[in-house]
Amino acid sequence: MRIGYSVVDITPDLGVELSGYGWYLGRKAEGIIDNLYARGVAFDDNSFKMLIINCDLIAIDEKISDYVREKLSKLYEINKTNIMIVCTHTHTGPATAKLVGCGEPDEKYLDLLPDLLIKAGETAINNLREVTCVKSFEKEIDPISFNRVRKDGPLDKKVRGIVFYFKESEGRPLAILSYGCHPVSRGRLKEISADYPAAVIKALNAEGYDGIFVTGLCGDINPNTHKGMSGRGTPEVINEYGIRIVKAMIDTIDYVGSMKNVKLDAFEFSVDLQMQHYTEKEIDELVNIYEVDKEKNPGIFKAVKIWAQVMKDKLHKEEDPYIEKAKIQVFRIGDALIIGFPGEIFTLIGTIIRNEIPSMNIIAVGNANSTMRYVPTKDDIENKGYAALTSCFLYQRLPLKPGEGERMAEVVAREIKQRLK
Image (cartoon, rainbow, N blue to C red; front, side):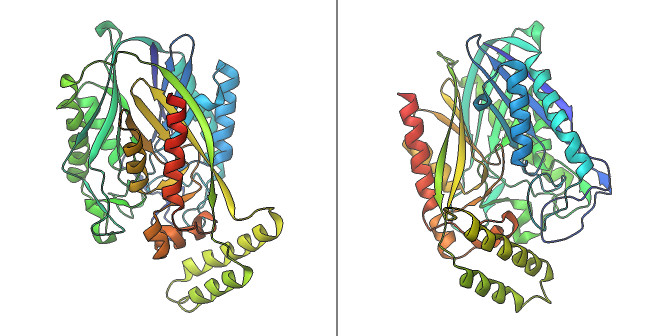
């Protein structure tokens, strides 16, 4: 098997509006803390090809993702299903997806972005090196994070990863690392930053590795710097987060055996998610609730009004407005699976899948190929939490029925087990 790696700078110009942290903030970039990058990892075992493009972005519009994947598919004869574009979900980068009220997209930047992502894919594909050894690992750490939804809620404390080794003359090893935590440690700054994932790459490079960091499932997880929704992690704290995550690999990898059979595979399937059956009357009632506090919270009221009109149009125009298709993408690399979800997914969903497939090292990631919505757990939906209800206004979606997240996890596990037979 051969692997290629690339790094392409995708930092926008100053003046672009940054995405995240609230409604209609007008948070335009005034400086740069970290440059933003797209990093490509290409896989080729002569009979099968795959490609991951990892971006320091909050999310990616599905139209851009589809265009880039289709273009690379035609250029290099890689099945579109075998190309994954996954975002780290930094909240100090440009608006690159549909998030109403959370940053206005810069059209000039959006015009440039597809070619930059294609370049990341091309460069990785054109710089393949022969792999001599592959290892995968998981290691629990003292968490950098906490469950922001429930005080006693699930928290995945494990760093997971895959490490590829080459002949010494062909360059240093390459690691794919993952940990589930929202990249919001910097807080509501007006500077561009990749947040703590940049610190992970910095620490990885310092240890003599190239690599990418794919953010694990973190729909309900924030960094410890963000307790009380304050953010403002210092550079020292954020750098320590990166070192702590990389140390999990360094302390573990020498004691892990090499994969015996590094089989490559990639597949995609859809899960039908069921929405709550909101009527026009219920939509109007929700608008009225937010109108009461419109002077105190004008931004969210503005977003709710936009949402209400879009949802009414949806009820009239769509054959079944209460079903959404979530496209799930799975990459297999030997005994490891990278599962890409098109949204912000709660931690428990990954745990359910891992419990169903204990023989595989499962790296579950969000914001893959698009970010359509939050997928919370039953309790959050019943409690009408931020992920369950309020976030629907920025993603322009109807709320999910309680239990849909857990059901999605079961469907995903079943589909994967069928493929592994």
